[in-house]
Length: 429
View 1 (cartoon, rainbow, N blue to C red):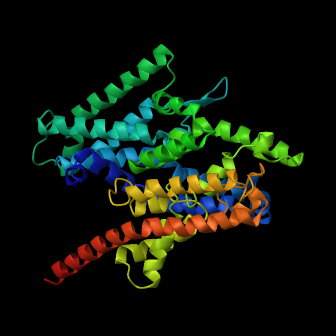
View 2 (cartoon, rainbow, N blue to C red):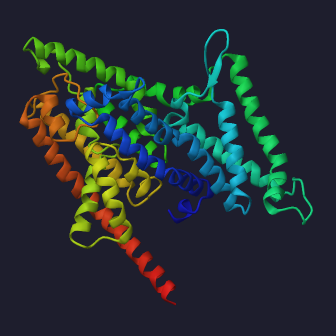
View 3 (cartoon, rainbow, N blue to C red):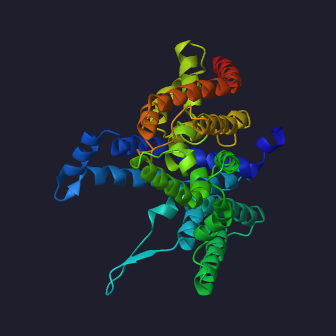
Protein backbone atom coordinates (compact mmCIF):
# COMPACT_ATOMS: atom_id res chain seq x y z
CA UNK A 1 0.00 0.00 0.00
CA UNK A 2 2.85 2.36 0.83
CA UNK A 3 4.58 1.49 -2.45
CA UNK A 4 1.36 2.21 -4.38
CA UNK A 5 1.06 5.60 -2.70
CA UNK A 6 4.61 6.42 -3.87
CA UNK A 7 4.07 5.23 -7.45
CA UNK A 8 4.88 8.28 -9.56
CA UNK A 9 2.11 7.88 -12.17
CA UNK A 10 -0.52 7.60 -9.42
CA UNK A 11 0.92 10.65 -7.68
CA UNK A 12 0.79 12.51 -10.98
CA UNK A 13 -2.87 11.55 -11.50
CA UNK A 14 -3.74 12.64 -7.97
CA UNK A 15 -1.90 15.95 -8.32
CA UNK A 16 -3.38 16.57 -11.74
CA UNK A 17 -6.92 16.04 -10.51
CA UNK A 18 -6.24 18.27 -7.50
CA UNK A 19 -5.31 21.05 -9.91
CA UNK A 20 -8.92 21.17 -11.07
CA UNK A 21 -10.48 21.70 -7.60
CA UNK A 22 -11.09 25.48 -7.98
CA UNK A 23 -12.86 24.86 -11.29
CA UNK A 24 -14.90 22.02 -9.78
CA UNK A 25 -16.09 24.14 -6.84
CA UNK A 26 -17.05 27.11 -9.04
CA UNK A 27 -18.73 24.84 -11.59
CA UNK A 28 -20.62 22.98 -8.87
CA UNK A 29 -22.04 26.24 -7.52
CA UNK A 30 -23.41 27.37 -10.87
CA UNK A 31 -24.61 23.86 -11.68
CA UNK A 32 -26.76 23.99 -8.55
CA UNK A 33 -28.10 27.39 -9.56
CA UNK A 34 -28.93 26.12 -13.04
CA UNK A 35 -30.60 22.91 -11.81
CA UNK A 36 -32.13 23.97 -8.50
CA UNK A 37 -35.21 21.73 -8.15
CA UNK A 38 -37.79 24.49 -7.81
CA UNK A 39 -39.96 25.01 -10.88
CA UNK A 40 -40.48 28.73 -10.23
CA UNK A 41 -36.73 29.29 -10.01
CA UNK A 42 -35.85 27.35 -13.17
CA UNK A 43 -38.66 29.11 -15.05
CA UNK A 44 -37.40 32.50 -13.86
CA UNK A 45 -33.74 32.00 -14.81
CA UNK A 46 -34.91 30.64 -18.15
CA UNK A 47 -37.08 33.71 -18.81
CA UNK A 48 -34.74 36.47 -17.61
CA UNK A 49 -32.58 37.55 -20.53
CA UNK A 50 -30.74 40.51 -22.00
CA UNK A 51 -30.23 40.91 -25.74
CA UNK A 52 -31.59 37.39 -26.21
CA UNK A 53 -29.16 35.74 -23.77
CA UNK A 54 -30.99 34.01 -20.89
CA UNK A 55 -29.59 33.89 -17.36
CA UNK A 56 -29.77 30.10 -17.55
CA UNK A 57 -27.48 30.05 -20.58
CA UNK A 58 -24.97 32.19 -18.68
CA UNK A 59 -25.00 29.75 -15.75
CA UNK A 60 -24.51 26.90 -18.23
CA UNK A 61 -21.65 28.73 -19.92
CA UNK A 62 -19.89 29.28 -16.58
CA UNK A 63 -20.35 25.60 -15.71
CA UNK A 64 -18.93 24.49 -19.07
CA UNK A 65 -16.09 26.98 -18.82
CA UNK A 66 -14.99 25.66 -15.42
CA UNK A 67 -16.48 22.30 -14.54
CA UNK A 68 -16.47 21.32 -18.21
CA UNK A 69 -12.69 21.57 -18.57
CA UNK A 70 -11.74 18.85 -16.10
CA UNK A 71 -10.19 16.55 -18.72
CA UNK A 72 -8.12 19.29 -20.31
CA UNK A 73 -6.86 20.91 -17.10
CA UNK A 74 -6.34 17.50 -15.49
CA UNK A 75 -4.13 16.56 -18.46
CA UNK A 76 -2.00 19.67 -17.84
CA UNK A 77 -1.68 18.95 -14.13
CA UNK A 78 -0.79 15.28 -14.62
CA UNK A 79 1.94 16.01 -17.16
CA UNK A 80 3.29 18.83 -15.01
CA UNK A 81 3.40 16.71 -11.85
CA UNK A 82 4.98 13.72 -13.59
CA UNK A 83 7.69 15.89 -15.15
CA UNK A 84 8.39 17.68 -11.87
CA UNK A 85 8.75 14.36 -10.05
CA UNK A 86 11.64 13.71 -12.45
CA UNK A 87 13.14 17.14 -11.73
CA UNK A 88 12.23 18.69 -15.06
CA UNK A 89 10.12 21.68 -16.13
CA UNK A 90 6.52 20.80 -15.27
CA UNK A 91 5.00 23.90 -16.84
CA UNK A 92 6.48 23.15 -20.26
CA UNK A 93 5.43 19.50 -20.04
CA UNK A 94 1.89 20.55 -19.13
CA UNK A 95 1.64 23.00 -22.04
CA UNK A 96 2.85 20.34 -24.47
CA UNK A 97 0.31 17.86 -23.02
CA UNK A 98 -2.53 20.36 -23.52
CA UNK A 99 -1.47 20.91 -27.14
CA UNK A 100 -1.41 17.13 -27.64
CA UNK A 101 -4.86 16.85 -26.07
CA UNK A 102 -6.26 19.33 -28.57
CA UNK A 103 -4.50 17.53 -31.43
CA UNK A 104 -6.24 14.18 -30.74
CA UNK A 105 -9.63 15.73 -29.90
CA UNK A 106 -11.94 15.96 -32.94
CA UNK A 107 -13.08 19.40 -34.06
CA UNK A 108 -16.62 20.53 -34.77
CA UNK A 109 -17.46 22.74 -37.72
CA UNK A 110 -20.31 25.14 -38.42
CA UNK A 111 -21.31 26.70 -41.74
CA UNK A 112 -21.05 25.19 -45.19
CA UNK A 113 -19.23 27.99 -47.03
CA UNK A 114 -17.09 29.37 -44.23
CA UNK A 115 -16.78 26.68 -41.57
CA UNK A 116 -15.75 27.77 -38.10
CA UNK A 117 -13.75 25.27 -36.10
CA UNK A 118 -14.43 24.58 -32.43
CA UNK A 119 -13.94 21.95 -29.74
CA UNK A 120 -16.78 19.92 -28.18
CA UNK A 121 -17.16 20.52 -24.45
CA UNK A 122 -17.99 16.83 -23.94
CA UNK A 123 -14.44 15.75 -24.70
CA UNK A 124 -12.84 18.59 -22.74
CA UNK A 125 -14.61 17.61 -19.53
CA UNK A 126 -15.30 14.32 -17.78
CA UNK A 127 -15.64 12.31 -20.99
CA UNK A 128 -12.09 13.28 -21.88
CA UNK A 129 -10.56 12.61 -18.48
CA UNK A 130 -9.34 9.11 -19.27
CA UNK A 131 -7.66 10.33 -22.47
CA UNK A 132 -6.30 13.27 -20.45
CA UNK A 133 -4.71 10.87 -17.98
CA UNK A 134 -3.10 8.84 -20.77
CA UNK A 135 -1.78 11.91 -22.60
CA UNK A 136 -0.62 13.56 -19.38
CA UNK A 137 1.40 10.55 -18.31
CA UNK A 138 2.84 9.93 -21.78
CA UNK A 139 3.65 13.59 -22.41
CA UNK A 140 5.20 14.02 -18.96
CA UNK A 141 7.14 10.78 -19.28
CA UNK A 142 8.49 11.47 -22.76
CA UNK A 143 9.33 15.06 -21.86
CA UNK A 144 11.37 14.12 -18.80
CA UNK A 145 13.15 11.37 -20.76
CA UNK A 146 14.35 13.86 -23.38
CA UNK A 147 15.48 16.39 -20.77
CA UNK A 148 17.14 13.87 -18.44
CA UNK A 149 18.97 12.32 -21.41
CA UNK A 150 20.05 15.81 -22.44
CA UNK A 151 18.22 15.69 -25.77
CA UNK A 152 17.49 19.41 -25.74
CA UNK A 153 18.64 22.77 -27.03
CA UNK A 154 21.02 24.59 -24.69
CA UNK A 155 21.09 28.36 -24.62
CA UNK A 156 23.93 30.55 -23.26
CA UNK A 157 23.83 31.39 -19.57
CA UNK A 158 23.19 35.03 -20.47
CA UNK A 159 19.74 34.10 -21.82
CA UNK A 160 16.88 34.60 -19.28
CA UNK A 161 15.81 31.28 -17.66
CA UNK A 162 12.25 31.45 -19.04
CA UNK A 163 13.55 31.69 -22.61
CA UNK A 164 16.07 28.94 -21.95
CA UNK A 165 13.33 26.59 -20.73
CA UNK A 166 11.26 27.33 -23.82
CA UNK A 167 14.09 26.30 -26.11
CA UNK A 168 14.85 23.25 -23.96
CA UNK A 169 11.25 22.14 -24.46
CA UNK A 170 11.44 22.54 -28.24
CA UNK A 171 12.79 19.09 -29.19
CA UNK A 172 10.65 17.03 -26.74
CA UNK A 173 7.64 19.20 -27.61
CA UNK A 174 8.13 18.56 -31.33
CA UNK A 175 8.40 14.80 -30.71
CA UNK A 176 5.37 14.58 -28.39
CA UNK A 177 3.01 16.70 -30.44
CA UNK A 178 4.05 14.93 -33.64
CA UNK A 179 3.37 11.58 -31.94
CA UNK A 180 -0.17 12.56 -31.04
CA UNK A 181 -0.64 14.09 -34.47
CA UNK A 182 0.13 10.63 -35.86
CA UNK A 183 -2.48 9.17 -33.47
CA UNK A 184 -5.07 11.62 -34.78
CA UNK A 185 -4.10 10.82 -38.38
CA UNK A 186 -4.45 7.10 -37.69
CA UNK A 187 -7.99 7.52 -36.40
CA UNK A 188 -8.93 9.90 -39.21
CA UNK A 189 -7.54 7.83 -42.08
CA UNK A 190 -8.89 4.52 -40.81
CA UNK A 191 -12.38 5.89 -40.07
CA UNK A 192 -12.17 4.65 -36.47
CA UNK A 193 -13.71 7.84 -35.10
CA UNK A 194 -11.50 9.30 -32.40
CA UNK A 195 -9.53 8.14 -29.40
CA UNK A 196 -12.11 9.44 -26.92
CA UNK A 197 -14.92 7.36 -28.39
CA UNK A 198 -12.68 4.31 -28.72
CA UNK A 199 -11.72 4.41 -25.05
CA UNK A 200 -15.34 4.90 -24.01
CA UNK A 201 -16.46 2.10 -26.34
CA UNK A 202 -13.84 -0.36 -25.13
CA UNK A 203 -14.58 0.32 -21.47
CA UNK A 204 -18.35 0.56 -21.57
CA UNK A 205 -19.70 -1.74 -24.29
CA UNK A 206 -19.33 -4.99 -22.32
CA UNK A 207 -21.28 -3.36 -19.50
CA UNK A 208 -24.30 -2.82 -21.77
CA UNK A 209 -25.42 -6.39 -21.02
CA UNK A 210 -26.04 -5.43 -17.40
CA UNK A 211 -28.72 -3.19 -15.96
CA UNK A 212 -31.95 -4.97 -14.99
CA UNK A 213 -30.90 -7.40 -12.25
CA UNK A 214 -29.70 -7.07 -8.68
CA UNK A 215 -26.41 -8.84 -9.45
CA UNK A 216 -25.77 -6.72 -12.52
CA UNK A 217 -26.56 -3.51 -10.65
CA UNK A 218 -24.22 -4.47 -7.81
CA UNK A 219 -21.46 -5.01 -10.39
CA UNK A 220 -22.23 -1.65 -11.99
CA UNK A 221 -22.20 0.05 -8.61
CA UNK A 222 -18.86 -1.52 -7.77
CA UNK A 223 -17.32 -0.49 -11.11
CA UNK A 224 -18.68 3.04 -10.76
CA UNK A 225 -16.82 3.44 -7.47
CA UNK A 226 -13.71 1.66 -8.75
CA UNK A 227 -13.39 4.00 -11.74
CA UNK A 228 -13.98 7.04 -9.56
CA UNK A 229 -11.26 5.84 -7.19
CA UNK A 230 -8.64 6.14 -9.95
CA UNK A 231 -9.93 9.57 -11.01
CA UNK A 232 -12.19 8.50 -13.89
CA UNK A 233 -15.81 9.66 -13.89
CA UNK A 234 -17.52 6.35 -13.13
CA UNK A 235 -20.94 7.39 -14.38
CA UNK A 236 -19.54 8.44 -17.76
CA UNK A 237 -17.68 5.18 -18.20
CA UNK A 238 -20.23 2.76 -16.76
CA UNK A 239 -23.68 4.31 -16.60
CA UNK A 240 -23.96 5.86 -20.05
CA UNK A 241 -24.19 2.54 -21.88
CA UNK A 242 -26.72 1.11 -19.43
CA UNK A 243 -28.83 4.24 -18.98
CA UNK A 244 -31.10 3.41 -21.97
CA UNK A 245 -32.11 0.22 -20.16
CA UNK A 246 -32.94 2.15 -17.02
CA UNK A 247 -34.91 4.74 -19.00
CA UNK A 248 -36.92 2.04 -20.78
CA UNK A 249 -37.70 0.45 -17.42
CA UNK A 250 -38.84 3.83 -16.13
CA UNK A 251 -41.13 4.27 -19.15
CA UNK A 252 -42.63 0.83 -18.61
CA UNK A 253 -43.30 1.62 -14.95
CA UNK A 254 -44.94 4.91 -15.93
CA UNK A 255 -47.41 3.16 -18.25
CA UNK A 256 -48.22 0.58 -15.58
CA UNK A 257 -48.72 3.31 -12.98
CA UNK A 258 -51.09 5.18 -15.27
CA UNK A 259 -53.04 1.96 -15.73
CA UNK A 260 -53.07 1.29 -11.98
CA UNK A 261 -51.02 -1.89 -12.41
CA UNK A 262 -47.62 -0.92 -11.04
CA UNK A 263 -46.43 -4.21 -9.58
CA UNK A 264 -43.85 -6.86 -10.28
CA UNK A 265 -46.67 -9.26 -11.20
CA UNK A 266 -47.54 -7.03 -14.14
CA UNK A 267 -43.94 -6.75 -15.36
CA UNK A 268 -42.83 -3.61 -13.52
CA UNK A 269 -39.13 -3.04 -12.90
CA UNK A 270 -37.22 -2.37 -9.71
CA UNK A 271 -34.05 -1.09 -11.41
CA UNK A 272 -34.86 2.22 -13.10
CA UNK A 273 -33.18 5.57 -13.67
CA UNK A 274 -34.69 7.09 -10.48
CA UNK A 275 -33.64 3.97 -8.53
CA UNK A 276 -30.01 4.58 -9.49
CA UNK A 277 -29.97 8.38 -9.27
CA UNK A 278 -32.10 8.89 -6.19
CA UNK A 279 -31.63 5.79 -4.04
CA UNK A 280 -28.20 4.32 -4.82
CA UNK A 281 -25.94 7.32 -5.35
CA UNK A 282 -27.25 9.69 -2.71
CA UNK A 283 -24.74 12.52 -2.58
CA UNK A 284 -23.16 11.39 -5.85
CA UNK A 285 -20.77 8.57 -6.77
CA UNK A 286 -19.84 6.48 -3.76
CA UNK A 287 -22.99 7.68 -1.92
CA UNK A 288 -20.79 10.33 -0.35
CA UNK A 289 -23.63 12.15 1.42
CA UNK A 290 -22.79 9.84 4.32
CA UNK A 291 -19.18 11.03 4.21
CA UNK A 292 -20.21 14.70 4.05
CA UNK A 293 -22.51 14.25 7.04
CA UNK A 294 -19.71 12.44 8.88
CA UNK A 295 -17.41 15.42 8.29
CA UNK A 296 -20.17 17.71 9.55
CA UNK A 297 -20.53 15.65 12.72
CA UNK A 298 -16.80 15.85 13.48
CA UNK A 299 -16.87 19.62 12.94
CA UNK A 300 -19.92 20.06 15.18
CA UNK A 301 -18.37 18.10 18.06
CA UNK A 302 -15.05 19.95 17.56
CA UNK A 303 -13.13 16.77 16.77
CA UNK A 304 -12.19 17.57 13.20
CA UNK A 305 -8.84 18.50 11.72
CA UNK A 306 -8.39 21.96 10.26
CA UNK A 307 -8.50 20.43 6.78
CA UNK A 308 -11.90 18.86 7.38
CA UNK A 309 -13.15 22.04 9.04
CA UNK A 310 -12.24 23.97 5.90
CA UNK A 311 -13.70 21.32 3.61
CA UNK A 312 -17.07 20.99 5.41
CA UNK A 313 -18.79 24.18 4.16
CA UNK A 314 -17.52 23.54 0.61
CA UNK A 315 -19.03 20.05 0.44
CA UNK A 316 -22.27 20.03 2.43
CA UNK A 317 -24.43 22.11 0.06
CA UNK A 318 -23.24 20.42 -3.16
CA UNK A 319 -23.56 17.05 -1.40
CA UNK A 320 -27.20 17.67 -0.52
CA UNK A 321 -27.82 18.24 -4.23
CA UNK A 322 -25.91 15.07 -5.20
CA UNK A 323 -22.88 16.94 -6.52
CA UNK A 324 -19.81 15.42 -4.93
CA UNK A 325 -16.85 16.56 -7.03
CA UNK A 326 -15.72 18.99 -4.28
CA UNK A 327 -15.73 16.03 -1.89
CA UNK A 328 -14.22 13.63 -4.41
CA UNK A 329 -11.20 15.78 -5.21
CA UNK A 330 -11.09 18.00 -2.13
CA UNK A 331 -10.93 15.21 0.43
CA UNK A 332 -9.56 13.66 -1.75
CA UNK A 333 -11.20 10.27 -2.29
CA UNK A 334 -9.35 9.68 -5.55
CA UNK A 335 -6.48 7.25 -4.80
CA UNK A 336 -7.21 7.45 -1.06
CA UNK A 337 -6.61 3.91 0.16
CA UNK A 338 -8.25 4.63 3.53
CA UNK A 339 -11.62 5.57 2.02
CA UNK A 340 -11.84 3.03 -0.81
CA UNK A 341 -13.73 0.44 1.29
CA UNK A 342 -16.65 2.69 2.39
CA UNK A 343 -16.67 4.37 -1.02
CA UNK A 344 -17.46 0.99 -2.59
CA UNK A 345 -19.53 -0.45 0.26
CA UNK A 346 -22.00 2.43 0.84
CA UNK A 347 -23.62 2.52 -2.64
CA UNK A 348 -23.67 -1.30 -2.78
CA UNK A 349 -25.50 -1.31 0.57
CA UNK A 350 -27.99 1.21 -0.82
CA UNK A 351 -28.52 -0.96 -3.90
CA UNK A 352 -29.13 -4.12 -1.88
CA UNK A 353 -31.46 -2.67 0.75
CA UNK A 354 -33.52 -0.60 -1.66
CA UNK A 355 -33.91 -3.57 -4.01
CA UNK A 356 -35.05 -5.82 -1.14
CA UNK A 357 -37.64 -3.41 0.27
CA UNK A 358 -39.06 -2.76 -3.20
CA UNK A 359 -39.07 -6.46 -4.11
CA UNK A 360 -40.93 -7.31 -0.91
CA UNK A 361 -43.41 -4.45 -1.28
CA UNK A 362 -42.31 -2.54 1.81
CA UNK A 363 -41.53 0.42 -0.44
CA UNK A 364 -43.45 1.07 -3.68
CA UNK A 365 -41.63 0.81 -6.98
CA UNK A 366 -40.58 3.99 -8.72
CA UNK A 367 -43.55 5.29 -10.70
CA UNK A 368 -41.61 6.46 -13.73
CA UNK A 369 -41.63 10.05 -12.47
CA UNK A 370 -38.28 11.57 -13.38
CA UNK A 371 -36.96 14.22 -11.03
CA UNK A 372 -33.76 16.18 -11.46
CA UNK A 373 -30.67 14.27 -10.34
CA UNK A 374 -29.90 17.34 -8.21
CA UNK A 375 -33.08 16.82 -6.19
CA UNK A 376 -32.07 16.32 -2.53
CA UNK A 377 -32.75 12.92 -0.93
CA UNK A 378 -35.96 12.51 1.08
CA UNK A 379 -37.79 14.85 -1.31
CA UNK A 380 -36.73 12.74 -4.30
CA UNK A 381 -37.66 9.51 -2.50
CA UNK A 382 -41.21 10.74 -1.98
CA UNK A 383 -41.62 12.14 -5.50
CA UNK A 384 -40.27 9.11 -7.38
CA UNK A 385 -42.35 6.56 -5.45
CA UNK A 386 -45.31 8.81 -4.59
CA UNK A 387 -44.98 7.47 -1.06
CA UNK A 388 -43.42 8.53 2.24
CA UNK A 389 -41.93 5.05 2.36
CA UNK A 390 -39.56 6.13 -0.42
CA UNK A 391 -38.31 8.97 1.76
CA UNK A 392 -37.99 6.70 4.80
CA UNK A 393 -35.74 4.18 3.05
CA UNK A 394 -33.53 7.07 1.95
CA UNK A 395 -33.28 8.35 5.53
CA UNK A 396 -32.46 4.84 6.76
CA UNK A 397 -29.74 4.35 4.16
CA UNK A 398 -28.23 7.81 4.72
CA UNK A 399 -27.84 6.95 8.42
CA UNK A 400 -26.21 3.62 7.58
CA UNK A 401 -23.98 5.26 4.96
CA UNK A 402 -22.78 7.75 7.57
CA UNK A 403 -22.00 4.91 9.98
CA UNK A 404 -20.14 3.06 7.20
CA UNK A 405 -17.95 6.09 6.44
CA UNK A 406 -17.40 7.29 10.01
CA UNK A 407 -14.74 4.77 11.22
CA UNK A 408 -12.65 5.32 8.10
CA UNK A 409 -13.15 9.08 8.30
CA UNK A 410 -11.84 9.01 11.87
CA UNK A 411 -8.63 7.40 10.61
CA UNK A 412 -8.22 10.13 7.98
CA UNK A 413 -9.03 12.80 10.57
CA UNK A 414 -6.44 11.43 13.01
CA UNK A 415 -3.78 11.34 10.30
CA UNK A 416 -4.53 14.93 9.30
CA UNK A 417 -4.37 16.15 12.90
CA UNK A 418 -0.99 14.47 13.39
CA UNK A 419 0.24 16.08 10.18
CA UNK A 420 -1.05 19.49 11.27
CA UNK A 421 0.54 19.14 14.72
CA UNK A 422 3.88 18.27 13.12
CA UNK A 423 3.61 21.24 10.76
CA UNK A 424 2.78 23.54 13.68
CA UNK A 425 5.82 22.28 15.63
CA UNK A 426 8.04 22.75 12.60
CA UNK A 427 6.77 26.30 12.11
CA UNK A 428 7.33 27.07 15.81
CA UNK A 429 10.89 25.83 15.60
